[in-house]
Length: 161
Image (cartoon, rainbow, N blue to C red):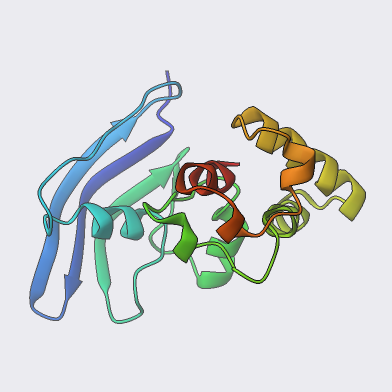
């Protein structure tokens, strides 16, 4: 079975500080991986490095292959075509990831329209389906809610959708 993602000797450095050094793992389709460790051990930096969201002054090393494609050398423009469609991250506190002045439906529709190249009507229909898949009750009505109107758990499920 081919690997979905392969990480070989990933490192993240900021000047002479190297908080992530030598991280390697792979995940096949259908598998799950949990990265655990104490606060400050580099879990978040590892994840941010995997999806190209480190600050510009950070340096990454090693290789990150997504279905055989090396991600680390990608330009920001190339990342935008992949991030949110092929790879992403659900942050622990989704309120910091959701725009408080847009409904959750508008935010999901925007992502779908960018990555799936579908019209607004199709994107709305698909967004409702996605909310239903993550067990948001009354998904059609919840599309018009703002993030502050949802519980923390529901906001996380919106981000998963």
